[in-house]
Structures are given as C-alpha cells and as structure tokens.
Length: 457
Ligand code: URA
Image (cartoon, rainbow, N blue to C red; front, side, top):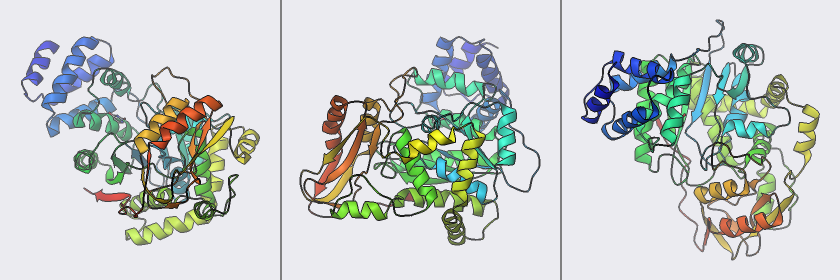
C-alpha cells in the first residue's frame, strides 16, 4: 500500500474504497503506519469528512481488528446503552441491572473519563474490590449467569480504536463525526448486540455543543448501526445541567444505589427545616436520573418487541425498578465482579467518604436559574475526581452532591451544593469556583426538557 497517495487522495476530498480503508486500519493497528502519517490522514478526514460507505468500511474494519464477543443462543436479547458522556451521568449503573431484570442480557463494555466528563469504569473503581478488567470468558459467564456485566474492553477487543483514539486525542481530531461514529460503533458492534440505545448529549458539558450537532451525530450513528444489523435508537439529551444531584465517582455510585432502592425516603446529614432540603429528603432519587434510566429501558423494550408502546414499556420498567429486584441484581453483579461486600456496605453507610465536606451557601433567595455542568465538571477534576492526563491518579471519594437544580427555590444562606474534598484548602478553592456555576433569579427559569428528541431508523 502506498499510504502517502491515500493521504493525498483524502486531502483532495476523494473517496477511498472499502479495501483501501481495511488496509489502512489493519496496517495502523499492526504498527506498520507511523503516527505522523496517520495523524495527517486523520486531519484530512477531519476536514474532508467521509462518505457513508467509507464510514461503514472504517467501522467494520475497526470492529474486526480484534476479538468479537460471541454469546450462546438464548431467548434473552443482547442489549446495551452508550452515552457520549456528561457530568453526573451515572445511568449505566442502575440501567444494567434493571435491564437484566427485564429479561435482557447486558454486556456493557464501558470506558474511563477523560477531560471533564466522567467514565463508568472510574465510578465502579470506587467500589471496594470491584474488578473492571475481566477476561473474555468471565465476561460471557457473568452475562449468561447474572444477566449483566459492566467492564472495560479486553486487550484483544477493537485494538484499532485504542490506537486511533490515542492519536486523535493528541492531534485535535476527536470532534469529527465520521471518526466518532467509527469509534463508538466499532466497539458496540463487537458486542454482538440485538439492540442498542444511544444517549447523545448536547450542551455546555457535552461533546456536541448544540442540539443540531448532536442530531447530526445521532442520525449518523443510528443509520449505520441499523444497517449493520443492530436495532438502534438515540435519545438527544440536555447536558447543560448535570444529571442528578451528585457528580464524582463514589458519590455517583451512592446516587445510583438510591435510584435502585427506588424512591424510598432517605436521610441527609445536612437536614434542616429549609424548604429545599425537605424536598431533597423526599426526592432521594433525582427525577431526571430516573426519567433517563426508564426512557433507555423503555426504548429497548419496544425495540426488541417486549413492549408494544413506549408508555407501556416505561410502566413495565418503572414497576420492575420499584420491585427491588434490580437492586438485588446489582448486588449480584457486584459479587460476581469481585466486590468486597462488607467493605462496600460500610462505605455505603457513610454520609461521605472524603475527609472534608463543605456547603456552598446561596448568596440570596430566589430560583436557581443555572447550574452549569461544565463548571461543575472542572471543579470535580480540580478536586482530583477527574483526569487531566491519562496518567492522572483519581481520588474516587471527592465530588459534589446535594446539588440544587434549575427551577428550584432556595433561601439566602441555605445550601446550593456540598463539596467533598481531600482537605479544607481544596474544598474552599472548589467552593469559590463552584459559586460561579450557579445563577439565582427572582423569576423561575423556563423549564427545559431533559430529552429533547428521539432518533429512530
Ligand atoms: N467516545 C468514543 O468512544 N469515541 C469517540 O470518538 C468519541 C466518544
């Protein structure tokens, strides 16, 4: 292969055929194309784009660069959910056991956070003993016996994406829709799924800044995934505001467990007689988190013919969540993945695992008009809960919880959020920065729907 001529062809906007793309992927994965040439090719793709047939060839070549997960035939459909990432997005944690209880098998292969957005594997790493790196045989065993597993890609799965993503990350070529489609779908198609639901986020803390860009990405993902035989839909969801009331690895596990416990009234160490704190106590499961978990489950029920309408499917999922069975399934999954259950229970019983907790107080009374997810993500990263580089060592216990959300009323001096930090100085720095994430107004802000649209094939 004369790779230079392929770079030049793409630079001039010419289309490559499937055989050429397959050769590029195979050669790069095998280390036969130097990074400087691949970086030039990726930049050409970034500016010139790829035609539909090229994206398909790229995706399938990446999928086939490693081992595919194959499962025995079974009446339970294989399903998964993928989110493009956000702040406080812990949907995968309660969703996987809920789906297993609804009669699905869920081989949820997840990733780590980079930049300000969190990663499912980092959240799970905050659970004592939990193993996110499992050999293929064990992944299959857990999916077959428990019904769900949440783990990382094995070394032999989709190696082309690992190599390409690392290069894209340092060459300014991540935000290219064809490259994103290839990266996301190569991994999902390697799971041998029957159905997939995608949560494509837009807004301040999302990969896609606007609803229009998110729609473009969602359409490309849904079209190709369906063409490749996986029944796929996408939800377009708002990521201007964090999801739920907690962000930070361990705090998100706690909130996920609260979601699985299903709306029971919880206690808060900061409970007082203020209006907002009383509402927090009765709404221990954040409404937006529950809405998104149930929406993902409902779409998959409809996609696989297990429910006739979205309304009926949502009710089926809500009844299942309320039954307590998904909580038991979560505990079963934790045990199967090596959790030290006694240590986990002890940690779960704590109000906070970080050494210092500081409240951010509302400077005035009014309506919360803004809770900026991007600033929150930056604060958590500064506290040590997110990565500045791939080598960053995380503090799993830091973060922010008890967040006041847009539309809620607060009194002057009452808490807008609690900051969980490693020490007092870091807590105070975070508090000063987090203050800028909030705006309080005299009038209620316009209500913004969490799910802006659905994209179907
Ligand atoms: N997530 C991925 O897995 N790949 C991308 O390229 C972007 C987001």
